[in-house]
Each structure stands twice: as C-alpha cells, then as structure tokens.
Amino acid sequence: MEIRNAVNAADSEAQYDEKAKRLLGNKIILAHILVKAVEEFRGMNPKDVVPYIEGDPFISVVPVEPGLTNVVEKQPDDRKLSVDSKLSGDSKLSDDSWKDGQRIVGLNTENTEINEGLIRFDIIFYVRMPSIGDSKGVLSQFIVNLEIQKDEPTSYHILNRAVFYVSRLISSQKERDFVKTNYNDIRRVYSIWVCLGMDENSMAHVHLVKDDMIGSYPWKGGLDLLNIVMIGIADELPEHDDQYELHRLLSALLSKEMAVDEKLGIIRDEYNIPVDDKLRKEVGEMCNLSQGIREKAELDREEKIILNMHKIGYTSEQIAEVVEKSVDEVEAVIRKREPALA
Image 1 (cartoon, rainbow, N blue to C red):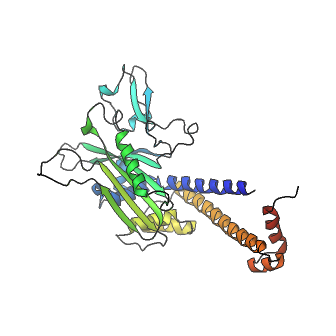
Image 2: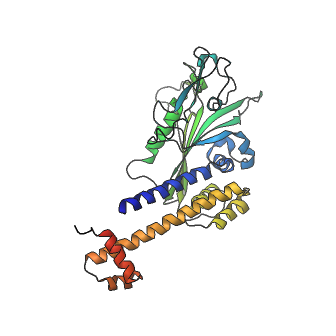
Image 3: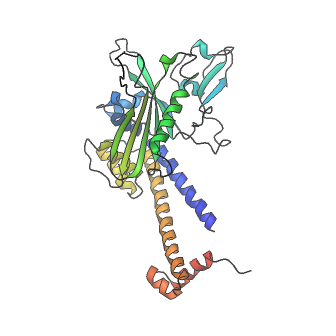
C-alpha cells in the first residue's frame, strides 16, 4: 500500500508539472515572459510579441542529452522540408546541410515513449525579432528555453544546470542552424528558469562579459550568444506593479493554493489575457491536481501522527481525540501499516 501511495503521489506531481508546462507554453504567457526577460522586447505589449514566436513550442519532447537533441531525417529527392526542419526558421536550407540531396537536421522529438528515461527540456521555441538598425528589415532569430522548478534544488547548484542547458542549446545548433565552420550563423540562446518557493522575488541576467587583461583589442564575435535568466518566485503573491508584474502573473498561474476563478480573474482583469475554453480547462486541471496533492499531504501528516503516537504507547481512544478521528479510523491506519502475522 505504501508503494502504491508513493507511486500515486509521484504521478500526481508529474501530472501537475506537465500541466504547468502546458499552461506556461501558451504563446501569450510566453510573450509576457519575453517582455520582461529579453532586452529586445522590453517595453512592448505582449500581444504584439506573440507573432514573433514561431510555430508551436516544443514541450517536454526535446532530449537534453548530448547527441540526442538533434535528429537527422532522410527526405525524398524533391527536398520537401519536414515540420521539424522548419523549426530552424528557414524555408530553404544551405546546400552544405545536405548529403546526397537528402539530409535534414531538426530538433529530435521522436520516440518519446521508447526513451522514457531521458531528461528533456521543459519548453523550447524559436523567436524572430527585427534586427536593430537593419534598414533591409532582415529578421534575426534566437532560441528560447523555459524551465520550471518547484523549488531550488539542494543536491546541486541550479545555476550550474542552467549553464549546462544553455551550452547544449548552443552546441546542438551545429548541422541544424549552422553548418561546417559557419560559426557566425550561431543563433543566440536564452535559457529562462522560473524557480518557485524562493525566499524573495528576484530576476538575474547571467551572460558573457569581456575583461581586457592586456591591451584592448576589439575581438569580433557575439558576447550576447549565451544568456541565462533566473526568475525567483516567492510564496506570497506580490502586488501588481511594474517591477513585479511578471512575478505576480507567474505566481498566480503556478499557485497550488489559489482557486480557479481567482486565478482566471487575475489573468483576465489585470493582464488582459483572453480566457478561452482551452486556458480555463488547463487552469482547472492544475487546480484539481494541486487540491489532490494537498489532500494527500494532509492525510500523510495525519497518518504519521497516528503511527508515532501508537508507537510510544498511546491508546486508540487517546489518538482519536488528538487527531479528531473516530477510533475505527485510527485503528484502520495502524492495521494498514503493521505487518500481517504469519
């Protein structure tokens, strides 16, 4: 029974995590994040940012492991492009990306069931943005990875993991976004981490800087290629002001305590986000799962109290009075946890 309960609890948590990713994967929510986390979008209306998000975000399908982020696809001689290959944003790939006129490299989204144990990026999507000062109107393109953490890990430093993820997103571009030694074609990458349960609301941009040690030679290259944005979300819902606008939205969306109508009210009234049937369903499913998780945690706490009191010699009647349960309920818990006699 304990194993079954543990599995059920883990399954509920996994379902909640997946619902959270799906909810944040809505383009209008991603646009709100981009407006606060990415300099090029700063000050824009999130609704105006949505069109710059290309295609549908890839949610929990792209492996992190080296060698598995990309997939090579064979195409017929007419060189029709697949959906995955179009994720790179080009309707025509360089001839160097072909082998015998048939080679296409895209993000690997295949065999998610077969490779069930693989660690996957939470959310990945491509974004286009008009290049600053480009009179021809050529669009620049970068890759955004969004990761959601229920708390700050204790077994490793979260920033180290973020560095690994952003490095994978850079290195995996070879043969997909650039070929051979065309390193000037590397796409800029943003890895954005939303960490819940933090002591304070915070946001930090971690990126490359150049410190001249001898001389001041202007080395050519993009210091802006690698970007990590860490967003800390405290438990208490912040006030709605410009500084904590994104924190309030994320805190409301991911809260396990707030009711459905309360969440939808904030989304609709404060952020002018249309609440359609899809969004209402996603928020409702998350709230149902969080309610189940809370109830399970409360039952586990009560069972622990009952078993501890039983272990030190309290009678069933005394325990029932403390935990405000019937004697039959108390004894059922004790019988469930005690081994059966041979």
